[in-house]
Amino acid sequence: MTDVVLSKTRFFEGVWEGVVSATADDHIAPKITVTHLQEKLPDVSVSGGGEPGEWLLRIPVPAEKIADGVQTFVISDEATGETLDSFSIIAGEALSEDIRAEVTLLREELDMLKRAFRRHCLETT
Image 1 (cartoon, one colour):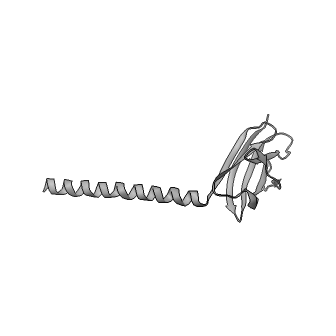
Image 2 (spheres, rainbow, N blue to C red; image 1 turned 30 degrees about the horizontal axis):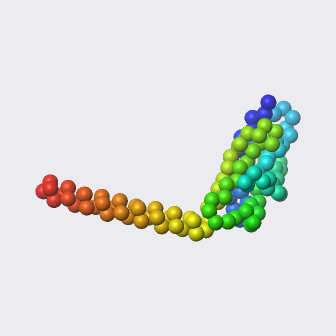
Image 3 (cartoon, one colour; image 1 turned 90 degrees about the vertical axis):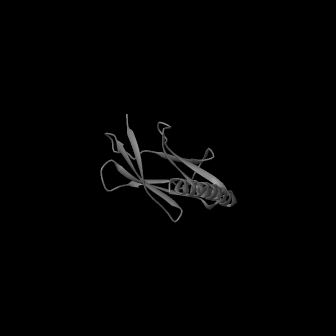
């Protein structure tokens, strides 16, 4: 049995990168599958790393997979079907509306806290 562990190193210029570590006697690179909405991504590569039992994983995110809202990509060990990790890209109008609503809510709560603090200060002096 092989234990596969994935550690993210960076997400840069549209490519998610990580290090895959595996404990196996044969030192064969594990097969990794990346899916978005149950569809396999092309051009995922697993290449030799610097240490024995480690491989470099590169996942280029196709431009057509980037859209409004949250896009989640699931990284799995093809042999076992086990999910190793996932990452999400959030973009578009849905994001800006969510952020504006959250900021408005935070401002209202801050104003409420300021009023309560001022009232407390007046009552204790």
